[in-house]
Image 1 (cartoon, rainbow, N blue to C red):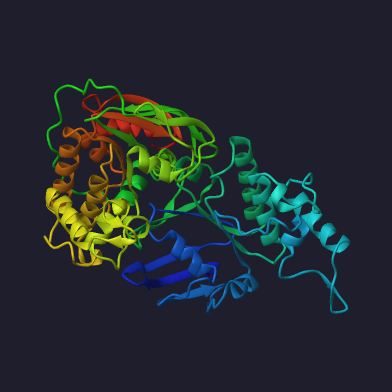
Image 2: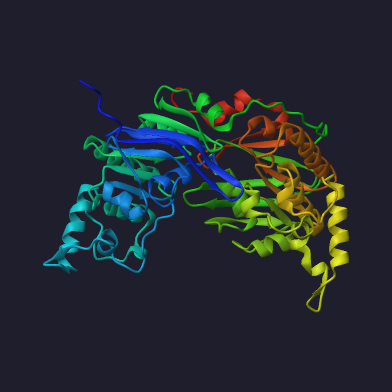
Length: 505
């Protein structure tokens, strides 16, 4: 007897956007009744792949087979009609509508050709909520009044209100506490027992052990491993597949003694619910402090909260002894903070503008008078800042999109030098940078610290953190589990700390 074909088979899926090849021949097979985990770092292609599966993006090439037959998913409605539902991390619920109205939005109950509101929709919704183990949620209550966990249950009820055979869950546990995560896993187990397949996306590797059957790992738009057994594949192997570390690291020499100055950056009891626990840290002028941890440990979220791009739940940030206004990037920049974000092309650079404009954009008040910009002064200042970092080519008039990854990162750093920042926040500073340019960036970062800048560094590459930082805070699940001078740590020790308690690690 021939084996059953996969419920879903995606083969050779490619998808490009202007200047970016997001998917490069990805294959994914999902069996009925399994939890198939999709792993990869930010930018690996996970979001694009699930949007192709959801019908929100059309692939450039490749085939999708559903229950053994070729299909074309031209829209989210087409995917839903086949039985494919997607629950995104940012829930797409309508807050001013009731639970029942959200659950049946777009396919309201009808009788004799007319939409039936009220009692029938509420009764149907109540049955779905009971199935999900949350009969206490009132179908008539406004979604905007529910907790994050309850809103997620509503999204699941909406998916189950269709004849769904596959549910994609994108970071479903991100905003949940441990008890709510346990309930989520119970729901997933019940769904798969009924033959429903689940594609589960998470940065929390210990969750994959608990809930997953098989794992596919994406990196740089490619599937570097498919169908790995979730329970028995060593965590170290998964991390290596996600990061692809096989480069040489050449680091500048660090000072023999830590700086003795008073901290310029102090973080006291800072936290964000569902992302990281209360945290204390200090960074002195001339010091590089590194945050080490797996993807999903809260590293980037900490940097963005310090910078004011996310508003803290508790705690405060002080620069030079003065507290910053919570959730205000403007206040952070005025106080002397600068951020080089993880996704520099999308979050930091004006790709169609010149290097000059990219460098000067945070200090335009220096070059404008009465509504007019002194172009000569702007160009001169940008040229000085880029030369200080040896940015190539030595022509700040060229579009920043024409630069290599390493020189684009130097343009971001030059912006903050021109602004006169006191604290530099670096999130994955060498992502997309080749080996030779990495060594240059390491030297630049060390020199800036030696000249008195305070640096807070995040990297998914443990050798990079240990090689650059003077002091390291090790994170696991949003908590600092260890702090030590970098010279007292090595990569195996850090990996043991970040994966402590994980099976098969």
